[in-house]
Image (cartoon, rainbow over all chains, first blue to last red; front, top):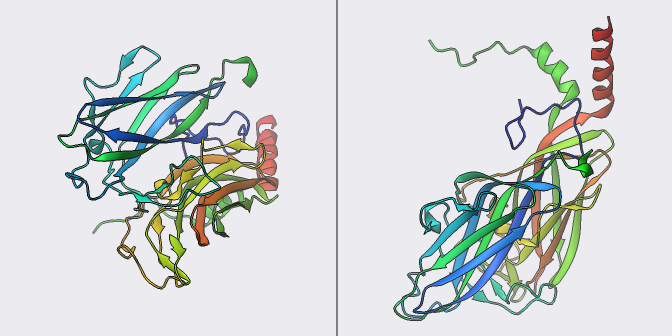
Amino acid sequence: MYMDALGKELDFLHFDLQRQQVPYMYYKIFQIVVTTQPQRITWTIPLDKGYGFLLRRLGGIYGLDNRDAPNANLPPLVNIELYDTTRGRTWQDIAYPLRLVLTPGDQGYWAVQLAPVDTENFGLGFKAEPVKNKLTYNKYYAYRQTVKVELNIDPVPVVVGGLYIELILDGYLIPEMGLEQWQ
Amino acid sequence: MLNLFAKEINPVKILKMQNLQYQEKLFLEDTVPANSQKLGSVDISSLGNWYCLFLTGSYTTLIANDPAVDDGVQHLRAKMSDGSNNRQLFNDYIPLHHYLSPGREKSSISTGVLTDDPSGNLFYPQPWQYMFALSSQILFDVKNDSDYANTYQVTFHGIRFPEAQRLAEIARRKQLRAA
């Protein structure tokens, strides 16, 4: 018996190709200069028209651009907060370390020549580590809301330079069936 | 004495069910030239709709060095789409190590390895439930930022629903209800 993302049994004799739930991945890479001051980065994602979003898993890795910097072997602590924008509240009491919900590790950073086919990768490459364990979130963002993720970077005693963080939001776009476009 | 099977395995019942649905894996392998982009695709045949359950895959991480060396850095990023309606399933080109497992693999072309040999990677299939229409395609557009060609392999694991049998079963149940 197979079930869709919301736990409803799938009917394989009669199914709706147009109004089915769509698996989707949101990806972003952040470039930060780590300093002696705390920093906050906000990532907001407006959802596709006609869909809500069920966040299933969060993935992420980070790396420093200067492997020889003081304290480079202790990457800054990255904390994360998720917001329930539907109700205007947060989904935790305080930001928690990223490493407590997934396995970011330190995947290092190698400066590579900027590829002519991709101008958005900041000219860097991450070590190709295996896919790592992640916890399941199952958080639902309703239609017309925005997915909001905040990263808080702890300050460090000595500036270590550039920090790169890659985040993946892995889930399903759920069509909002009450809308005219799905009738 | 423990009975390993809670229910009797009924071959007749299973064979009948497999007329309507059966596991089928679709395989895509391609080589992306240095510093360029290539669109890979898998055909969903006219046999029937195909329901994807999860993905697994692997890739090389080569850079040019007489002729090539494995630097262990991710050079490939991809964007997946449903070819039937060009619906994009990724918001951007996403590096393969985020969702393809077991991931990095050695290449026989490499004359050396700059980082640890990839081995013993934990197998972590990426769940990916989606129905692809019959006679459509799964599109996998891949960019390579290395100065050497890199190869990737993706297996899409799913279930095939033969269309002729599906329609026949619907007609049969309608007839039963009418009777």
